[in-house]
Length: 226
Image (cartoon, rainbow, N blue to C red; front, side):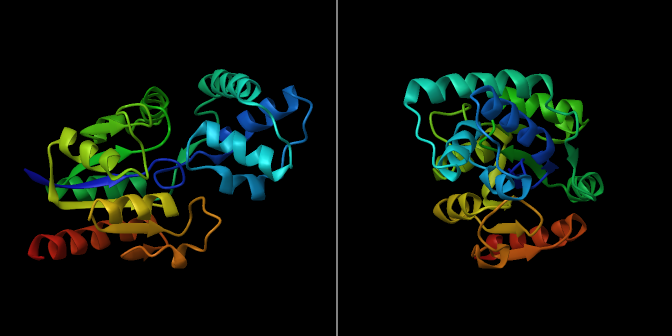
């Protein structure tokens, strides 16, 4: 089995905030609610669309029952599917970094709490889907991050070696997931988190995508030796 690097999607590989926030605005405005400003709402991203809606409602001190939130979730998904790549773009340096890792013989995978069909659709529209041996979304398995099985099953399905695996992410959820799976983790500083990136507890912190291959290869080597 080959070494593997798994990536979170939103806030790690792709700056999806513009389209996610417009979908959130649409959903809240449909219910007569004022959307939060984009700066605050960026930190609602990362645990899936439903959690994003729930965080926005909590931020606005609005309490809705499950049935109402279910309806908002459906509205969000319908809008988002039609606008999934209007403004979302890979972060600078993503494509050459993925190519460099592939040239090193490293498998690539995605482990995201975005629903699988949406993750695949987004990556296809951005021309990135073929880079990945496996794309795991929130509904791919019976569990999702921070359950470590979401990560370990994604690595296994991609054909990767769990003893030579690294996760790249942007949030506390990613760090918790990787540590529970006993897999090293690299945090990016440009993603979506309300915790300062340096305080996430990742094994490495990088500030630009060009630095990810070197950080990942170092951790792969150390993990193999350990």
